[in-house]
Length: 77
Image 1 (cartoon, rainbow, N blue to C red):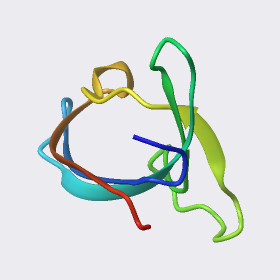
Image 2: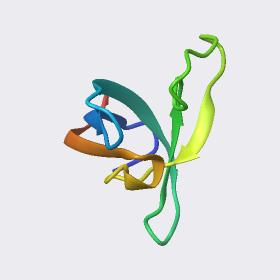
Image 3: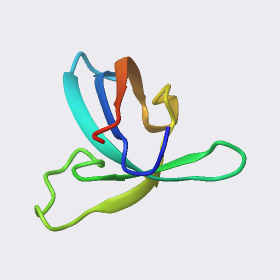
Image 4: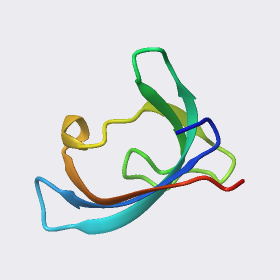
């Protein structure tokens, strides 16, 4: 995995029956393997199309109350 890779996943809320899909881009990976991603709409509220947040990526999703499944990584080059 490299900076610029695309992550696509489906998720399910742990609190409700809501299901959805999400796309983010790998921003950086540190020496310990922690991944930071660039993403929009990461707090459940529609964001301005120009607002991009840099967040820590948890492949389980549990720290934000979701269950991630169908996790895919793509290298666009």
